[in-house]
Image (cartoon, rainbow, N blue to C red):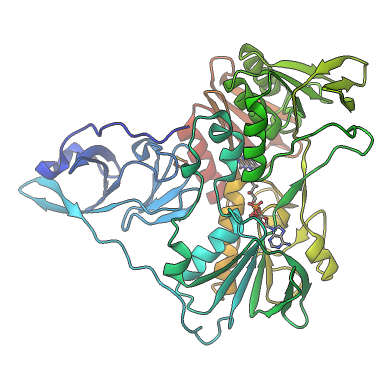
Length: 511
Ligand SMILES: Cc1cc2nc3c(=O)[nH]c(=O)nc-3n(C[C@H](O)[C@H](O)[C@H](O)COP(=O)(O)OP(=O)(O)OC[C@H]3O[C@@H](n4cnc5c(N)ncnc54)[C@H](O)[C@@H]3O)c2cc1C
Ligand code: FES
């Protein structure tokens, strides 16, 4: 999905439009000084912000207005209409904010409002931790750092991450970047001056090897130690490896978690003709689609009867399979690799698939080793309360490792979603500062297969029935995953408003 760089259309809002051209609660997309601007009317108040989402360029005019905010139709970012500030990821940059004036029965957009100043560190406030260490600078860690400063924390912040490219747009590593449709310059999440301007200390290329909660101390991989006032664990997950014995000595199997992994697959794809992808998960299928975009012959091998059936159900699974087949992918379902080597993948049924490139996307495991060794409570992940605090005072956990009490399902859940990790990073940061905020956001993820985006809100590990509204094959549908008379999750294709409305309804239902 590329950023929308089209020239803005619609009325020139600097010339003014009639007040009654926009109804109360309504909006209009026009332009001002060559930029697309969204004008919103709420009672007697008028707001104007940039109309193009700062994430991937989604049209905010097609989004959902909720109070004095607007939510993006594509991946549910949320912006303040008063300031343009990005309130909810995945958008990280604020939108432009414009001043509005009313006169002579007309409303005019008169110019850009100044951006709020960036805060950097000096000394902490009473009651706040003396320092914060963030372990892992990916989706959750990065948003925690940004939120700490945005909320006015002025104490020292240190982030540690062995991946010296972090933070970057990890979801893109299996999509447009891997397909060759997005340049690497699009991947960094923050400008180069981000850390300097905010007084952030980044220990890039370094790993935390030990955590001592009683002494409030971490040890780094060079043996040095650091003390912290509060700590966020945001160590993410690691791809599951194939069992020993399957991969022969001469064989190379690629896994995909990092930008470096994605670069390695791109390099290997340059000289490859045939690829075998193991696993029909989101990652496996996105890799398959990206390698097709690079004109490789692609075979997908998976033990499942249908791709994505466990998450999306049979009907959507069948659709996804057909969609990939239409793009030239060959499936070997209810199969797995018995042996990889000699330029081929041999399946359990003896079939031999020649392969110049093998990529395995067979799941991930949360990186809980530090938490486990430190004696934190675990339950298939790091157990946290509704404020994302672990069993140890002053230690919070967020993202792929965290299992939290989800008010929407009434269960403790752990998910591997980009947006959830980012938003948990924000909430954990606020709780580190004593702002006492529940993490009650509705889980959301998206997945892109060729030109078909699937948006999913809520969380359903099991269901009694999936109600399908619309036509899956026509790519215009809503699937409701229902259990015990309740809708636990909703997946949509090209029904973005409905996805947003469902998210809001679930939020309101949970109070
Ligand atoms: C290729 C790919 C595509 C994806 N696409 C989507 C998508 O389309 N939609 C979606 O919802 N989700 C997607 N995901 C999942 C999403 O990226 C994750 O859910 C999200 O990144 C989790 O955030 P996190 O902060 O928990 O972990 P991460 O973003 O993985 O960050 C964890 C960081 O911790 C660091 N770390 C680990 N151990 C240590 C240590 N001991 N000391 C210091 N640092 C450490 C790691 O180097 C890493 O940078 C995708 C994932 C991948 C790999
Ligand atoms: S384009 Fe707006 S959230 Fe992604």
